[in-house]
Each structure stands twice: as C-alpha cells, then as structure tokens.
Length: 381
Image (cartoon, rainbow, N blue to C red; front, side):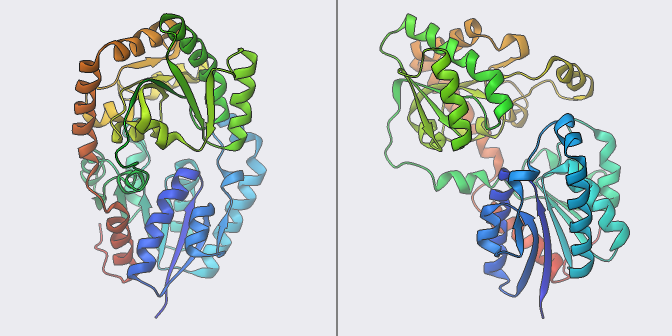
C-alpha cells in the first residue's frame, strides 16, 4: 500500500528542516510517495516530484507579496489542483504561515478527509493570538520546535507535539573538532536577506572601525549567506573603505561562530545557532519605522531574540531600532573583549538555554508524528 504525502515549504530554512524530516520519514517508511513544493534540499531527498520554488516564493514584507500577488495566486491554484488530484493521506505544511495557513483553509474546504500537520508552528504567541482558534479548527496536529509553544496550542484544543529543534542535529554535523576561539576575532553577522544587510551592515562596519581604533590588533570577519549577498556586502565594504581589513567569506557562518571571540548578530535563526556554539554576542535589529510602529502595536512579547524568548529573560543584550548604533554596540563588544569572565558567564547561560531545545533526533521525532497519520494511527483532536 502506498502512503501519499503532500508537502509545502516556502523558504530556505523550511527547506533544510523539511529535508531532514523527509529523510527520516523515507528511512522508516520507504513506501511513502511524496509530492509538493520546497527547495533544493527537499528535492534532493524526495526527487523531482517536489518542485524547487524557494527562489521565487521566499519573499518578505507586505509590499513585496502584493507586488507578486498574481504569481502567488496562480501558484496557489496550481498547488490546490495538484493536491486534489494527488489526494494524499497527509498534507504537511512547513513554516511559511502567510501562505500555508491560507492553503490549509483551502485544503480543509476542498479535501476535508486529508489530515493536516503543521511543522514549525507560526509564531502566533508573539504576533496574533486570534489566529489560534483558526489553527485548532484547520489542523490535526502541530509540531513545535520550542517547549513553551506546546501548552499554548494544546490548551486551545489542538493535538500538539514538542519535537525539539532540528538545529541541534544540523549544527552538530558542522561542529569543528578541537577548535580554539581567537579572542581578537570579531564576527559580523548582518542577516540573510538583502534588506537586513542594507539596514544593518553599514552600522556594523562603523562599529568595527570604532573597535579597531580602540585596539589595532583586532580582526573582523563577515560571512555572507549566499553569493548574491556576498556581492552586496562587498559593495558596502568598498564604499566604506573597509574591504582590505574586514574579511568577507561565503557560507562560512558556522565556522566563524566557533572561531570568533565575540560577535554582533542580526536577530533571527543565526542568534540561536551562535548560542548553540557558545559564541558570546549581542543582538541587533532594525526595520522600517512604520513597520516597527505596527509591530510594537501587535507584538505580545518584550524580548526580540529567540534565545531570550526561550530563556524567558534577557540572556543576550538587544539593540533594537535607534539603539542599534555603533557607539552602544561597540561598547558591548568591548566588554566581551576586555573580560574573559563575562564571556565565560554568557557561554554558561547560553548552554543552559540551548538545553531547552531538546536533544538530538528532532527530525526523527517529527517524522514519527507524520508517519502515524500516514498509517492512520494519528489520534484525533
């Protein structure tokens, strides 16, 4: 008997996590037939029945989505038609809430017999608690990465499983044996999107200039998330006259997180990755002023950084909006550079916080939950 799974992921992070889940699923359930959309990693695991669309689907912001409304509308209709034709036992939605929650609504309406599992829960606990009843109505199970998410959905009546964070497995494979930190090396992590880099990296360059004038033997390194971002970063370095003393690499962020003495990091998954490797850092973030005002009105949490949210207190220092400026950020990094005790104390707090992500095996635990629905052993809400 063939078990059919349809999967939808729309961003690179979802593609990586989805690929791990699908690999575990295929290992435990070799008969599973997989179709859907994702990225290159998922396609490598599941074959060309999973279309690689992330280069086009991974857009951020209301305006960017509106500009491509026609494209998204057409793809939505194509995916729904494919789902209705394929008639899988399970629809697996991975992150990407703006698209996936709407797709869950359409799937529930058109194919009510399909079980819907959501992997990497939408951050409704931060943005929109009013979405929770809708998710309870639409989904059969929520698979959470963070322990504090489970009671939020479970108490609302949705079957919820804390599977742990797949970063634990993914980052362990990138660990460099016997690596030593260079206390004079400062990492600059400006984010993985062009807009983030444009907003944050010039400030990081100015921060590095202040630190260099304070201590001339410091070294600086910036890892670009992609060749395209590397070109953008190179241009900003040249404009600032810093291309000869700030080293630019591509795709080497995990290596730098293990080698640097301290760092400044754009808010996002990189802050969690750095915490896993025990890198002392401060967090920065800037967004458009209007977007920030809207976010302040909607957001239900005081802290921005994932590590701080996980710890339920400020473990790493946050510099948001106008506070993300060279004087304050360089002062924070200077304290790390001057005090081995401060670095060690933060490293211990990061280790305690990261332990809450669960142990190795997140992909396997998530795959088991999906397999249970495929084999019709999933339990109802």
